[in-house]
Amino acid sequence: MSTKIIILSIGVLLTIIAVLGSIKGSSGKRFMNIKLIVAFAVIGVLMMIFGSYSSDLVNYNSRMEQVSIGNKLKIDGPVTAVRVVSPIDKDSVDCRILTMGVYPESHQKDIWVVIRPTDDRYYPQSDHTNTSYKRDGEWQVVTRFGGDKGEAYDLIIYEADSTASSFFSSTIAKWKEIDEYPGLKSEEMPQGAKEVERIVIYTRKNCRGVF
Image (tube, rainbow, N blue to C red; front, side):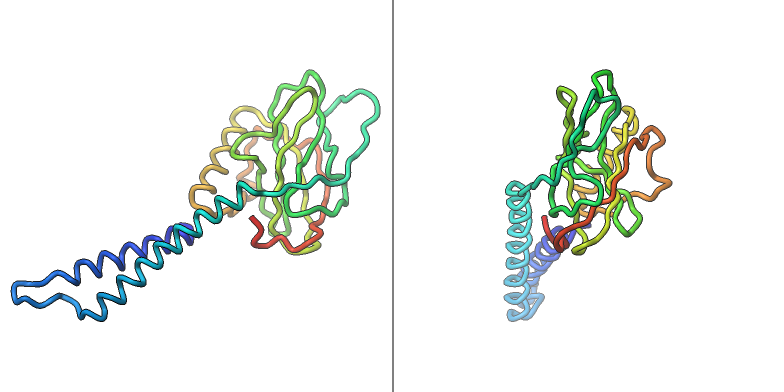
């Protein structure tokens, strides 16, 4: 359960307690001391406001997300396999980048970018919950990093069948719903996802807490 949901839930609970505590019994006395009622009501309302504001702020920051582009690899000759064009191996990148690449004309499978930071977990990347965008031999997807400055990441490109793509999409949707991103263990990666390229990149700044 996310922090904002916990804050909202506690705020609602305190407000309900304040309302119930203000009810007078058969003796004409309230169930709670008036000072406690006021305190619970004020704290409850403030927590609900804060929780709602935090949620709106997160959504606003998501809409205003700034994405940069790293260094680009020059591809000569015909494209015969799925390749990463940007960033390049050993590149230092910002917290949010557009990972781009190319694919051969006959390519039919979905393309997924998965990052593996130093916690040895795998994090599929997506603009929402979809696969990388493909068109006219080029693909791209927003890629997000959340580690320390200089942290190393494996940036891995997978070709995925429909079953693997559905797994990645549903996993991301579940993480978004609970607002927690625990990553996937190696054994949890779907069998229908085949690694086709892997590079190492580094974050050029501290990306912790960046939306």
